[in-house]
Amino acid sequence: MPIKYLKDTDARFQWLGWRVGVFIVAGFLCFVALVVLLAIRQGYFTPKTRLSFVAESGNSMSTGMQVRFSGFKIGVVDRVALNDQAKVDVELLVENRYLKWVKPDSVALLQQDGFLGDHYIEIAGGTATAAPIQEGGKLVFAPVMGLSEIAADLRQRTIPVIDSIHDTLDYLNDPKGDVRGTVANLNQFSAELRETRKTLDQVLQHLDQVAAKDLPATLDQATQAARRADQVLAQADRAASDVATRLPGILDNANRTASEAAALATTARKAVDGVAPQLPSIVRNAGDLVQSGDDLVNGAQRSWPFRNWVSAPDASAPVPESRGE
Image (cartoon, rainbow, N blue to C red):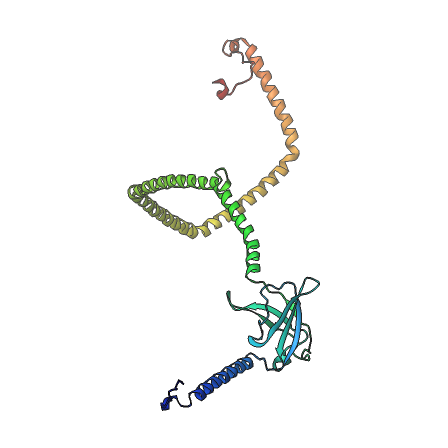
């Protein structure tokens, strides 16, 4: 007995196969359009020029890395390979529209977005007036230190500083070192300074007491002495005024006295000049007279009446009263 198929008469299921086919085709076309759009955005359909450079190491380099110029993407890394010289050949694909800024003497740098970002190749430098680089041109690669290189360099620079700080701390903590000795001397100096301050305070207190007690009396005495000095100066001024008043008369008297003395001296000189020629004969006559007097006295002493009255003269030399005492 043959099987009878049910006939679907629901209008909602009419043309269902066509609808599914159209949906699948539309989805496929959307996918293709998306892929094409992404390819266009990635520059797969943009004309490019192949450039290259040689690096010492391929660390942080990979195919598909961005190539940038002044921060803008201009291409990608197409190939990274190790050559026979144990160096790394890196090939770049740069869009032709940006090639006018890439010169034969431009430099390729390995950079990174921040500390944890992706690495990329930065093209920089170049002579502005030079012609653009051609297909297959080679760039100069300038290695830039990454985090590991920076850390290693920082370690090499920091370790000597840490060692120096450690040595300095050991030197400072040495009980027999200069620093400890200096600190001990400073402590001793501080103690002596405190003692000196105490002594100085005592001296200042004593000075205050002396100033309170003795200074007024000293000031009074000084005042009295100043007054006496003023009186003496006043008397001296009066005496000087009196002397100044009498000085002309005194000078006149002195001049007259000097004139009279000069006249007297002149007269005496004339008298001496007149007597001088007769002086030798007068001296001889005086000597004869004295000799005659001596003979007369000696004769009288030998006479009888006068011999008992006159004692014999002392033959010794006379002695002054001051020596006789």
